[in-house]
Length: 411
Image (cartoon, rainbow, N blue to C red; front, side, top):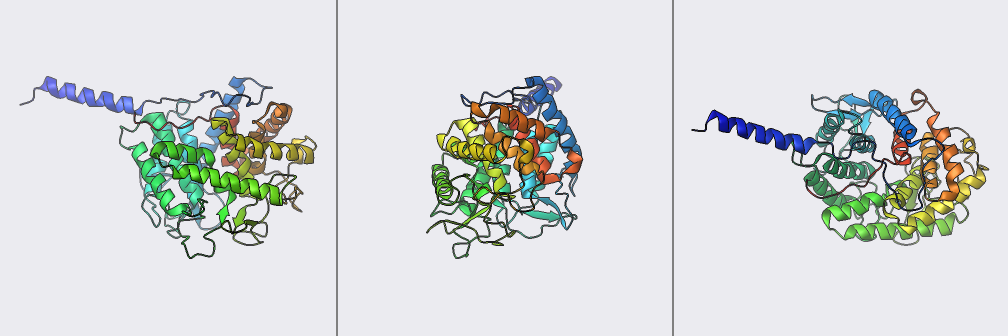
């Protein structure tokens, strides 16, 4: 018979293991040293950068994190009118944000785990991928995935493993590896290593050789390669950088812009035609491609990839020139020639924030960066929707120097 003393020892031992596993290992703020030569806003203190970011996070969380249909679930509220209450894109944003803000937010882990449970409760056509949208009754609109949401959820699991370890109730690292393998199998074209729009795209689909430009997330992909030792992720990075370079030189030599959607990658890649999938601006720099400068710049900040800097240098030169270095001249959409889309002379945070992150790649953009930061943070959360506010917050975390690279070892 086990003595009471031994029972108490065992209980304490497992309690210590659980506490150790849930310890916040990289609490906000982290003040990351990005690649040499990168800059941050320097006209205000680091303390102020951190505080403004934390304040906006608290507002964002209060508005957008909602309880799911089960007691252990949370989702990121999609907010717009219609049947959708949540989309996987937003779930990915929320899971990345929450894992990075842990420490400053004592309930971050509980929130993250609730977001994870909601993702797991809504598998798509494949068990490790998420059905792209749910209605107000938590019913999936269909079983197809949205690739960008899956890729951010997978990256967030690597962040969660780095932040809390994988010895608790959820093995974040194992879940990340399973999800990354499923993304490679079902959402990456095995011939061109381009990113498919969804897991519903089959080899005989008319859009099998098409891609959404904002789904190219090289920093995520490099982390996926490290986590799985799958060299195919390097092929995805290399082939998509080549594709972006071709699109810039061929269709946007002056501005360096990439269109929302790119077609016929296996032959001669072209911008998508109007109303290819979403709007008459599918071949322009619109509400998908606006994320490209942020995604590419993040790769440079974390890994120093010169291809990323080359893309952002061209964009930075153009946007500063076309706005005459005045942040309030940034429009919500451009042609590939670099002209404003007619009627888009209004403020959209999903365009402004990524231009700020893009500016971080070179010190010659310092004053521009400071001005765009000031412009970005002065917009009120109540005046914008889930998409603009979520991108703004993710970009503020990067701009404040608090976006760190996921590590992939078990701990």
